[in-house]
Image 1 (cartoon, rainbow, N blue to C red):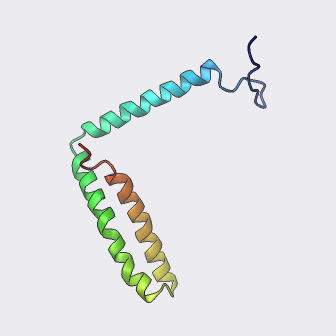
Image 2: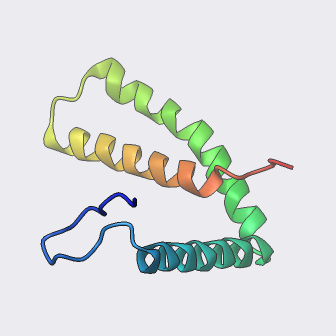
Image 3: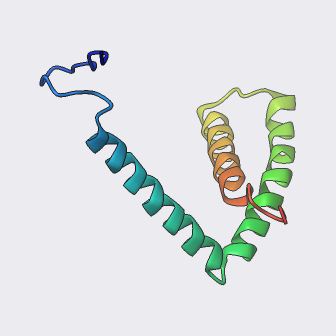
Length: 98
């Protein structure tokens, strides 16, 4: 006996082989993009800059945090630095892993 499959609102099976095929195709596309990204000539410099920016940016938080965030301009600056740090972390996460 087979177990009944889960049904969604449209009465189609969740986790059907078609869904699995789409997920596999998506993973293959993502893997191909990842490989293409690592083959590009600018990948290493971008990762290096991202890595070292992610290391250095938190030091720019110190004056803001030491004096306190008292104005809207300081808050925007802090949030901008935080967003830039997250972007640098994402860009530099693969730096020098070999």
